[in-house]
Image (cartoon, rainbow, N blue to C red; front, side, top):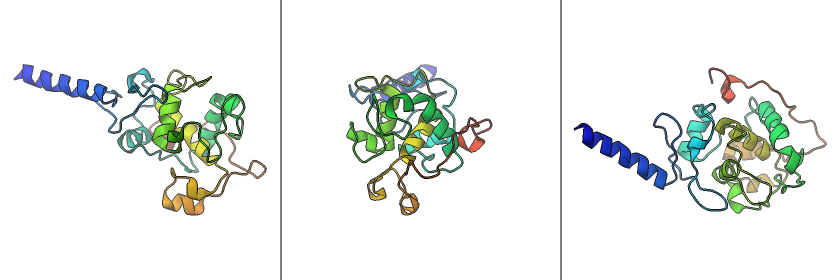
Length: 197
């Protein structure tokens, strides 16, 4: 009996790895298939820090491929801070592009980045040029926060913002660098994966 249970568990883990599901924690796996943007190989989520794996946002993302931090006013200040410290050096303060491509319009160097799943795959596993894998610098929750700020910087027609819900799209105002916007903050509220989040 024990041997059969072990074999089923081993087969499940092997299948999950083969499908690119990746082991996330104590038995948690992604229901979506996550693959490297350049090679197409499955992402190994166990390479990410353990911190930031068990937040509600990460669990929802691994189940659905959707980022619940998009346009969340409570999380945007921390999302902005993470973007400024980790992304703006290459992509510009407003996602306008510098060394790396612009991220604030409807053109995507990698078309899959139009979806939350695709953008996560590029951030986690890296891409061509200077975009290395970020799993050593950001945990998965921080990646989702950075993605939320990238989405907030969108300056084109909201109809093209497929990552927004219908309700978010109806309220979304294209980003204007000259207008007053959300200031960065170091605080990570519980609703955004902070302590007890």
